[in-house]
Image (cartoon, helix red, strand yellow):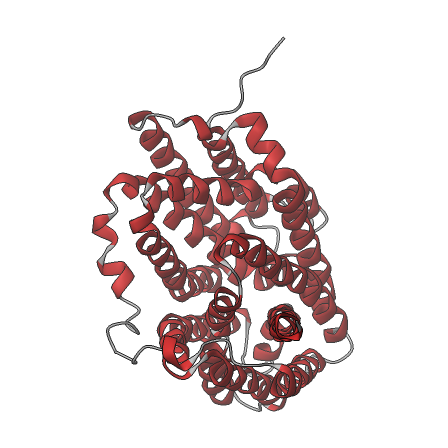
Length: 420
């Protein structure tokens, strides 16, 4: 009679640890978003030099994510989740402390290599949840994991901005301290989730980040939508990596100002995707919601680039509801467009696109921002990066319209008929 209870206890502890792990990892990453440009600025001269180096460091982080995410996943399949996850958490914690004490751009660049690789622990966390959760419960478990991710990103940038207004290095020390506490907690609490008999040998083929990209040609049914998602994702990453620099150059925003603004963005995403998403799909249907979102995003990017007062950014954030809801709607359409045997291939392709966007988005966005950073703050050309994002979003809208016209609409994608 005691055996079932004893078997359930480790699972509860493990799942709770993973939720805490993801929350603290995202909180730590969010802490440094508003202050990293200011830290880099201490070792650069002029806004163009700052934008240039910020792009290099962000792209370095993305390259390491691209290569290390499948490697960590494959290593965890071979040696178990616990050692890989704990090593990743410890490495990330140490990297934050080194960030806080860095005295040169070279030191920052080297430590971004480490932090980019160790931040890939989310892949292992997902695998851990799959190990300890029954198939019929995984949707709910992954939803909780997504909620932990979202809450961490809501509060991380705001807390980082507030602490950064006191001391620019303080958020890095806090992020490192949280990671070390997380590692200690896991060292004493976290059991292994993958039994030895279920482990698989490590192979370079399985750890190859280009595998999903090589198979993109097989996704014939959703080729048009893959292009739509790729364009939208590139625009989002350009915005994310230039937001802090742009608002600093144009409006004179401090880390505190950016922390509050990013908190507003996080809250908007949480409310729309967590509360309103289902209602919006019922009202408009997935295809119309996706199209409305892409159109709304195009206008929002244009507004971000044209407005001349910082407080107006909040108006655009609040009015961009449809764009926030478009991503999940597109993912749902893509998921249903392929059979069960192609789901893994499809998700791998989408993850590969995200990884490439993390690499090239910062380089493109900061490169453009560097070229216009010398202009007066009220010059419309200062918004060049956002105009590029608007162009990418508009092209995505046109491709989505073309794809939906050529593809019959499925019942699940339609808004319910109105009854009288």
